[in-house]
Image (cartoon, rainbow, N blue to C red; front, side):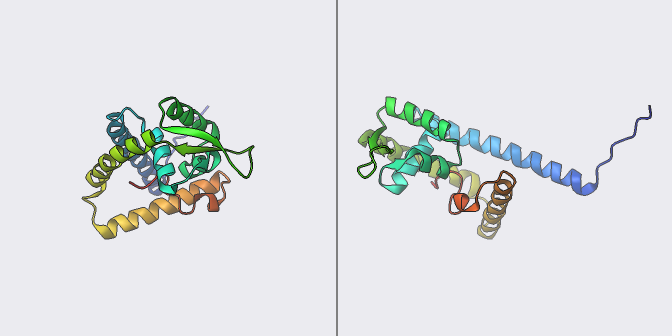
Length: 170
């Protein structure tokens, strides 16, 4: 048997390096935001659910929250369970369709997210504030394009992603 060396083109190596850098940047950034929300006793995903509810200012179906956060419904249900146990959200029945369960932000949930958002804004400024505005705009567009391409590969309808910037804006 002859061993044939595997060679990668310069372009392929560049793509793999880009993926590695993107993955590291994501993990470290997520860890940083997680460290901010943990000071308030919540995970970043739990905080994101509260931010979605705050942003819509009305009770929402769990399925809509899951779509907004680009999560599986089961994950969002587990987050809602934890938040409900802590008194930050409550489940209510839709008045028009009693089969539909909505998630509603409680006063305690509003109060905690009001504390968390300023800290997340500082964290966002810390990470992205040193990037020139034109570069930040270009970066946002590149991420939007990448998200669309990844969604396409997974068969996710682009309309589910449009206007959704992964996690709620802070």
